[in-house]
Image (cartoon, rainbow, N blue to C red; front, side, top):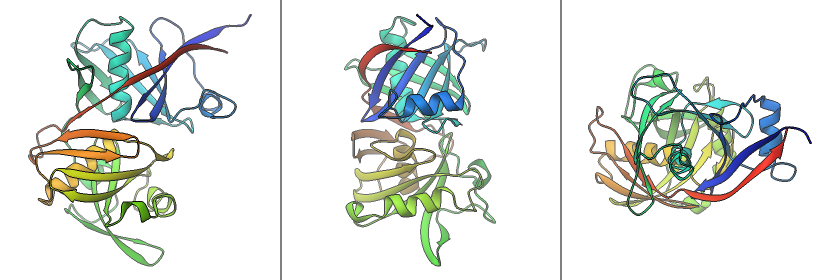
Length: 279
């Protein structure tokens, strides 16, 4: 028998992950291998692959790496962060309910709540266009983006990864696949962008669909929920705590409007199965 790799399949609101403990086993990944495992017919099937790694950084418990289904490495994933916390806690890699994690975009703190949900300090939103990066003359609450001769109003924010947020009046009819793909790879976003289509129901409720960079539309996007909330909060359209309803379920997002303060995300993380795959 050849070498085998142990992994877990998890999801946060249907945003699904292959999670690998790279502390207890040696893991060498190629983009081709990740694409093969991500295939829902011939592989494991997932939106992102999460790697749990050791860290040498003082005051940090783990290192957290994220790969999209296309094999590209990304900086941040909110639903993945909740699954990461549940994984390391349930697998006994830590007995802490407050877990500090190093990501490609900085350190985040994850909290296991008493009801088993995970609360994540997602860090402060960054509205500076160069943080996405987004090629525009200067920072604004709303930008006009031209796509195929039509202009769309968007908000733009980095939540450790780049997001464009469009207001829509009918989420079900929103052209998420077509327009999402065009904005994702728009020339003004040289490193591509995640695209959120947000319908504001009232000051405490947003309905959201997200076209994710490198993954197309997913059932849920945690950083996308944060981006939609802070974009609308900045415009005074929603309160400090909002329910964000995604196709896969609901998240609670809290932010007080102060750009130096963190965004808090609370939601479920579910273990589906443990397995091993031949290398």
